[in-house]
Image 1: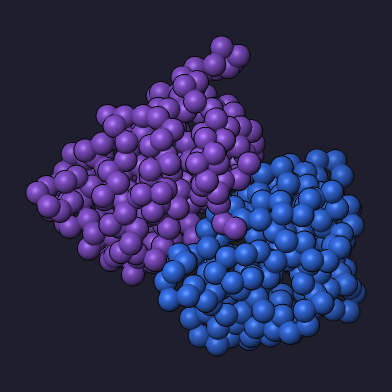
Image 2: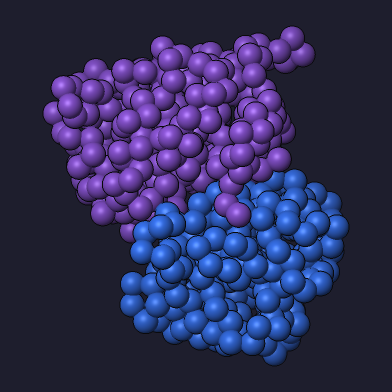
Length: 208
Length: 251
């Protein structure tokens, strides 16, 4: 199996690479690339993302043909994709960080700043929080409800269709932290930084 | 519910741990990678390396340490000490650091924090503030505590938030190394002033100090070095203790 971590200059992806390589060992061949043919010939794709929604979308678009290739991979070919953090957020139609920016539109919804109740809650939402699994997602196999995952974000994805939500987390409000829609998977938290349970989740994705 | 974090910090010099855990089963007591792994296996919420390498020719040793650690520890790794510019930050992140803490450079050139948080995202930019009390206010010190910038620490904290810092690592120089506990007044004042998380540092001598840092100092995370070294307390003991005091921790 070939899995490609899409490297589109979205900030620091070394932890994503390290964790997938650790889990994959001989099970999968982990590539890190933005070469379109490599992505096309992959069985699965990881879409990481750090920094702002706007910067990530811009960085994605800077690579000629990348969004078309990803659309084909995900929407036409229906091959599995895992978005992490801003990688997940980009699934949305629109993001409001810095300025209104169009997303990939794979899952209808928008990305807005977390309502921190007038400063009552610190932002970014940084640290270990428990996830409330609301849907039986394949990536949560053998992961208990209320497991801790590592978060770092100030914006949240609000999908239109609540059926895509697979987990939420409680902060200043109830935040969507994992989605699953057919072949499309995404986590707001960082499985690559969530210790053994995060690695288990990566393993689940690789075994899909 | 978001949990309060416990962060053990390791001082690294020329690629070796200066003070460290003194377990007999440790193969190499000076190996930062092995020590970081013990902490992360023990439930540390994050790991922090402070590079105190003095000479320039040995500066690169930290990069190898970070590279190796990030292949073995899958919790967030923060690296600080001697970070001068965007290039240093980029290099550390590429080696596998998740966050970089900036101290002197943030005081000397405000562009470092502004530019790096734009380029890499606020989530990986930690501004480290070394503060010392002078009369009724605190002043920011640089160069490992050697130089007094004269800048008011509270105002500086606010400015760093505006500049794009994702977190503040606040060390009381009056308390650092004393084991007398955090400077609670300093921590709570800064924490109330800013909307980003504050990591309390400097002065931890027992587990009650960790409790105070969170309950009274309003810190989101507590950093400590010596109480975790030499096997005085394990991360698990610290977490169990915090839990028994009603503080939410990841267990």
